[in-house]
Amino acid sequence: MNCPFCRHEDSRVVDSRPVEEGTLIRRRRECSECGRRFTTSETSALMIIKRSGATEPFSREKVIEGVAKACQGRPVESADLALLAQRVEETLRSDGQAEVEAQEVGMAILAPLRELDEVAYLRFASVYRNFASLEDFEGEIALLRAAPSKVSKEINATAPVAASKNSVNN
Image (cartoon, rainbow, N blue to C red; front, side, top):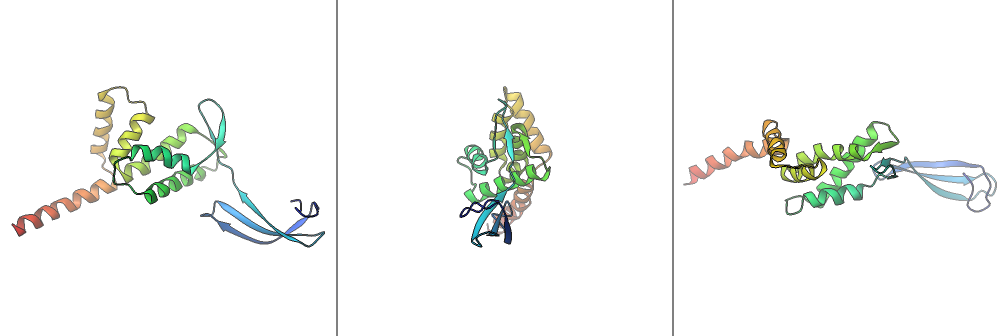
């Protein structure tokens, strides 16, 4: 690492600490020539290979923007979208690959989105998987009914309790 002050090529690390949920490491360095200190930041690059063959860095913001469209009008908070984007990035990084196909990003979005909101999941899946007919929607809905997400299980588990409370009060 070149010193930004004297351009000497040698420096030593004085302190290192992870920031931004561990995706960035901030290092405090000291130049062995002039003795001045400076800070560097290191991240591991996660590149997305688009369908066109071009590559671009992974962006949580792009994930949030894409999923927000599917969640429009749904009871989903922006904090939920940020958490979803973080989960997607963690899933992609867990494979240890430096480059990931765009298709894999979409696949990594589907599972956490389904847990978050099944209607938003169906919207996203219909665009992502290019649903062409009513049968495509019906097939996906059948899969949703066959294996409900944790959220819908919790809602269904509390629904009979709420119904029985109403019948007692009447």
